[in-house]
View 1 (cartoon, helix red, strand yellow):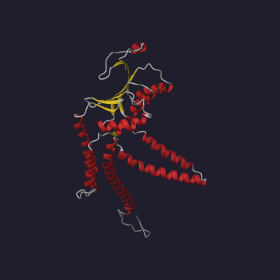
View 2: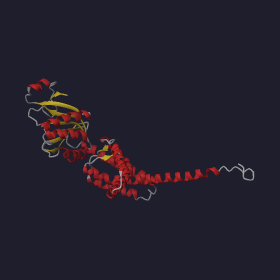
View 3: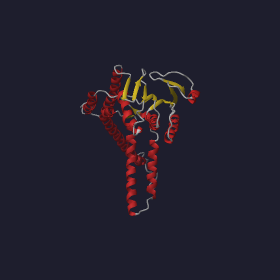
View 4: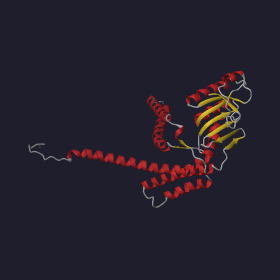
Length: 330
C-alpha cells in the first residue's frame, strides 16, 4: 500500500482485524450472558421441582418430563403476547389502525397452539404416594443441599439437586414395590367401582354404576379416579376397563378415560334396554374414539340367557375371571 508521497506503507496484519475483534467481543459477551441465564434457570427450576414434587405426589398428580423445556420456551411467548395484546388494546381505544398488531397476535397464538399440539400424556411421570414423613423430609434435604458450603459453584449445585431429585423419585418407587406385597390385590374406590391389580402390576378397573351416577364423569376421572390410581398404584395405565351398567354417562366416562390414561381394552356388555338418542350418539363416539387411540373394544354377554341377536353375534363361551361374564365378540 502506497502513501500520498508515493512511499510504501508497511503491512499491519492486525489493522483489518479491529472490526472482527469488536464483533467477537460482542459474540463472547452474548454467549456468556446466555450461559449465565441457562445456568440460573436450571438451578431455579431444579429447586422449584424439589419443593413441588412432594406436593404433587401427595395430591396424586403426575410430574411432567417436559417441565424444563416448557418453562424455557413459554416466557418469550408470554412476553410477546402481553406486549402485542397491550398495544392492541390501547390502539383500539384511541382508534389507531391496528391490523398489523392483530395479525402479529394471531401468529403468536397460532405458533403457541402449534407447539402445544406436540404435547403427549406419555410425558407425564406418575409416582405412588410414600409416607408423609418422607414427603416432608424431601424439601428439607433439598434446602440443606443448596445451603451447603461445599456446593459453592453453579455446577456443583446443579449436580447435587439433580442427584437429589432422582433419589427422591427412586425412593418413592422403591417404597411402592416394598409395600405392594403387603397390600390386597383388590381395592375399592367406591361401592360401585373397584380396581384389581394383577401380578404384572397391570390394573383392571371394574365399573358397576359409579360413572352412571356421577354428575360430570370427566371431572370424576380427572379429579378423583386418576389421582387415586396414581397415589395407590403409581400408574396411569389401565389394562382393562370393564363396564357392567352401560349408560349415557358411562360412555362419556369410557371415552374420556381412554383419552386421559393409557387404556388397552374396554369391555362393554350387550344391553337390551332402550337408550336415548344422546346415549346412542355417545356410544358411537366412544367406538370412534377407541379406534382412534388404538384401544381394543370388546362386547360381552352376561351369564343370563342372551337374546337371539346376541347369540348370533357370539363367538366364544369363555368366562372371565372374577366376573361371571362371557366373551362374545372382539
